[in-house]
Length: 164
Image 1 (spheres, rainbow, N blue to C red):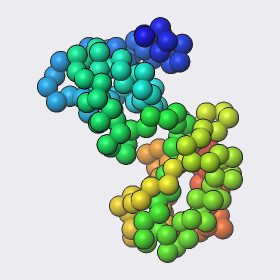
Image 2: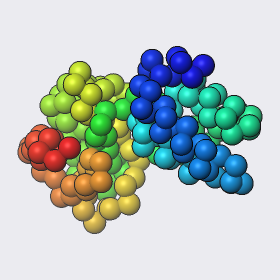
Image 3: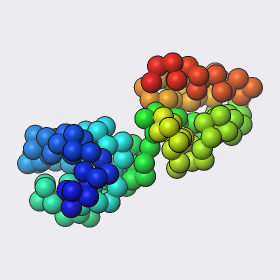
Image 4: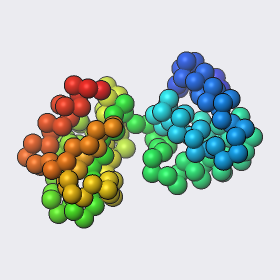
């Protein structure tokens, strides 16, 4: 199973995955931390990797799957190096977030759940980013862009490209 994962993620990344499991794998209640740190390495948690984590931590695969699918932070599908999250909560929606999402999808050249050909970006519509006073809001990585004019939405991708 590990060799198949090496083919998908590289030996270096799998060594980092193993190091995370070694450090936290026996700590009671650490599954959330393990999954967060591993996703930081692999950018997503495919089912084969979830099974691997479960086996190494000696817990049922259903527990890993349950946590990985419950929290919206985790992704089973591949993600770009930078995830573009467009808020569609009420305040953002009223201020044309659907148009922003459409413009950003076209600019990046992907639909939701896809990764740009260069692996740089993926895009997601999220229900609320908790920044209603800045509506409409887009988050790219650790950067929050607020009060976006839909007519100029593509500019935030250029800003994100400047600092990956």
